[in-house]
Length: 132
Image (cartoon, rainbow, N blue to C red; front, side, top):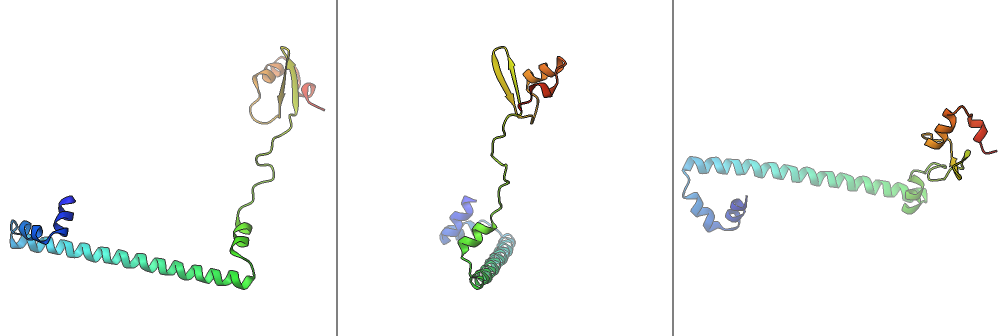
């Protein structure tokens, strides 16, 4: 790739490199570069058309917002998804157990802590450790 960049930037080096090729090889090389050039131009045109379309849609949306009497900030604020009411809030413990001189609390959600599981496996009920 660096050889191509070097030849593209220096006509004298390109002519010198061309002298090493046959006419058929040069024609094949030129045809390949012509095809590559056309492809790059098509891709650039498609990119520019897409940008123009996005710009037109953005202008249309801006006009609709202006007609509605809202500002862009208000639209952004109103369109952001709301977090659920309970997300991030802590849950009060539902169960409390005194074991080995320590107090253990559990919300009743998720996996049962080992201390509580051992207590329940010993034949005790959840209601006996429920916080009232």
